Length: 460
Image (tube, rainbow, N blue to C red; front, side, top):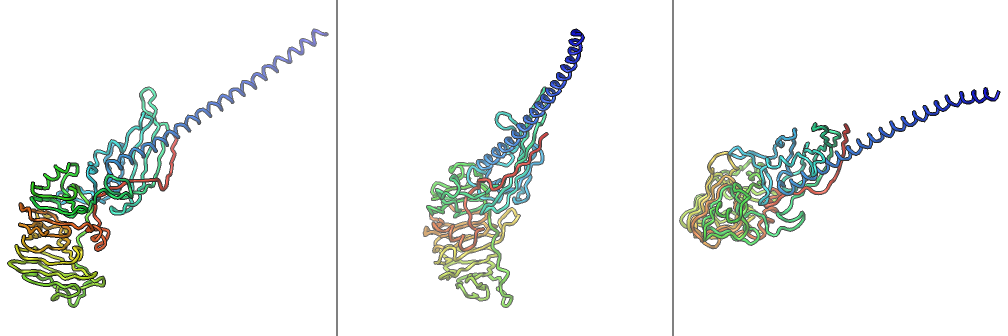
């Protein structure tokens, strides 16, 4: 009886042990599966985090390169559609007469590297080959004078290479909105420039000869077709500065954002309509007067005059009278010839007499000529004649021009008596008189801060 009972109990315990073992095994398998799933999820989360970090690192690399070597590209819209594609821009740059593209931005020396050289920085591997980044798009909103904001989108990819085969494990995109601010050369944003970048003499081609450009603050010369990546000695040679010539300020090369030449106002009274007529011989122009039907005065006390040409010879003089806040602006359609010992007399501020010429043409030669002979009195004037060849013959040493000269070609002479003096406040009075478009200066841009930041995560 006892043996039968023991046999029954042993037969019951064995299935129980098997069932319990199966339950424990199933639990262990479930736990292992959950642990494996958690491990895979953790790996994927880590790879997604790395993809985000790669995108952030790539954006930092791109912005650092733009700020350091390509600040003029900070105000361009660019997009890269392939990993090795050339940036395409939206047309904020214009074509020159020769067909090459010119960036409409103020530039500092050494900051006008060709955009092709940045391609290797727009896409690549982060330090340590942790992953690959590439620029998707860069969009700028603003202008070349005040800056604005930029939105940059960069993709980051976590790359693994099992058995030598590349595999993308995670991908992330970041969108950043940044502030793009103008700044003076070689100094931080909102820091005064060590020297003014206002160009007292600006031209596409410059032959200074023995002429002098005086002005400790604004006596700068800018040649817009000269290579900016040159030393002062190299720029002096490119601008034809001879041994007896002197420039108080800096010599600059490279493009700059130019305002359009001011046209004769469209709101001139129809009757009588100012006539386009020549000044040939001694004449006087008075602010606030019609000056024989040549001019009209607007509500801002600016007298606008249509002039076909100006020719003075012998002892003839053209006298321009301005006072107080009055100004005279001459819109000249043809040539200006001021012979030796003749004078264009204006004793007011240089910004109170502005002479505007024709807009820049696509012709290979100047459409206007301005010749100033030596021996006359100083002309207080602002010349803005972007399609003219302007030069001083001889020189009086008084100086010949007090103000600023912006033209297509400047043709200096061998005389060491010919000179231009640029007042210290010339940049500010030009800005005040003609608006922000005329606030030219050798500046660059910097992308700073993050206004908004968005992450788009694409796990594989």
